[in-house]
Image 1: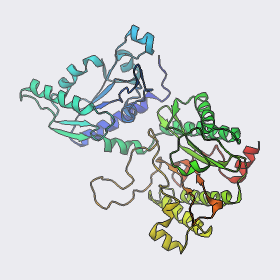
Image 2: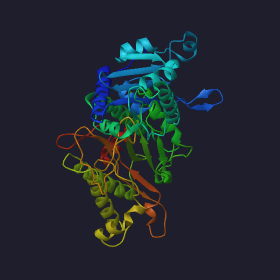
Image 3: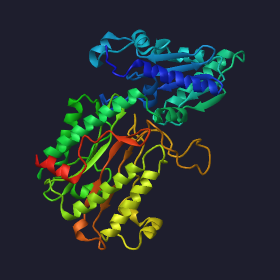
Image 4: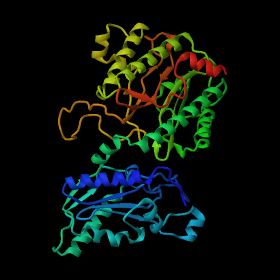
Length: 448
């Protein structure tokens, strides 16, 4: 039987929380699909990856599955999944099947997905409200199916029983739930960060002039899989030399040269949860003068952002602190002119720093959750305050491209430093520091 390392009770508790929220909205029925299989070529599919909201509530990782939750006089959780099929399982591996899935994942009922179109219209009867992830565009078939099921239910009811006349979006309440991580989630995310940190260490130790970017990518993938991660949380960025000034440069054929920096932005996915780490280091193991100067600025900016990441700070406080340090550093090195306040007011720093200092992290590498205080419909919402057990990245950077007004020593230097942080009662815990970040520590590690 497939293994699930996360305690099943966690998934059941989340379903109960969502059902309780549905009751506050007047009750009704919720329908959530998992992701669809995507064709890769004529006779193959991309590796399947479940829908995050569906998995958050179910723990179920197979394709072609649907979750139905009923908030009524008696709450119910119902799974539709593929039935047992010995011939298909010879080709594609074991399936849970409805009976075993209901028992193991603690659903009230489970049915073969072939019964979905018959049973769901029956389940809709008696419910005037339908909850579904309306703003999730990843499952394009969802609305078509739901419209069809409601139409069938209306015909069956003949006006004698309620059918859904009000549709509510599940994306916002689920995002708010997912934003605060429980103990199971934090345990998995800390292990994912540990695995990714070890992969970055391996890549640093393997680096030397003459390597291709894709060879370092292979070192990362080796550690991810060897340590038990299911794969990457996103396509790894491995950028040598000038490529580091391209924010999302995929590992390619470029060769690493003595005297250059290499930037690696990579993280594994473990049991459905992402990690996200970036390190920048010299190919030859020694930072040059210009590289060292810019690296120290970025590292100082990250430290200031970390100091502004706590429950006493709002979401944007870390970014504001980092931008101030980066801008002053650019002024000190002659890359910007004028005063600090002028540079901040006119955003001249954005030529060298054009992204935010972090994002939510969880099941998705850019995880769900608003950065402004809820509710979504309110105008002029302030930045939301950070709360204990939120998880985010802290990732300032500088990217200097060749230009007439830029000293040549700084040309083609791209630096980003990124760590994963869990908000604690007093501040934040960096869970990705298993890979060094200080210059002396990086140089010592690469010297071996």
